[in-house]
Length: 224
Image (tube, rainbow, N blue to C red; front, side, top):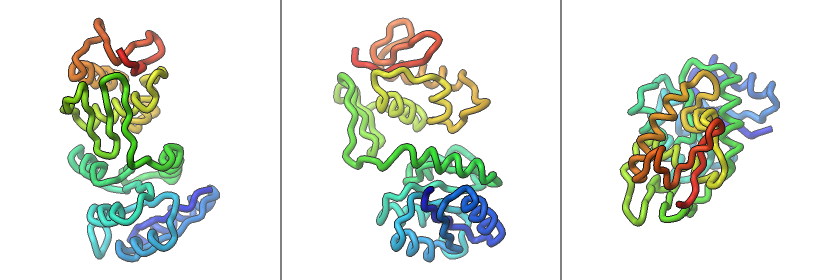
């Protein structure tokens, strides 16, 4: 059971989602406005906050930044904005995940479970593999001291592999963790991003250094 706080101004959606999560065994609190939600999060310290962006008193993106200033509670943003620029902006502002409206309670609960499995983030965490360092909080990767120019998904993919350094990660796991597509996603998407990432690491599939292919299984990140 998780303690979940839902910030949603639509009373029908708020009631339906809260009831569904409660039936699944969660302890659910709700707020109908941004400032009320901020006060509740600070006062009750929930395990997860589900944040709607279309709030009556304050834009949800601004509330997200305010939440991040006072709390490290995992935040799942519920939004009708599904373009890449909006999603990247939300993730860079501190969202842990997002879900596009309309969504099912089952989808939301699956994302809540996934966020909780990650555990609390270590704000000082820097992963080092050989001459490669990945600073997760700063979203910065360096190779031999040089900052790598990585797109958001390239960084997310590298971070996932670094967190599991020495272990093989399947493409299905990559789709689930990086693209939030555990079913039906195209492995071609992973292949393309791995190719771009290899190029920025100064290697290729035929001459790998850090990204080792285990044929028929997946990829593992190791020191050269």
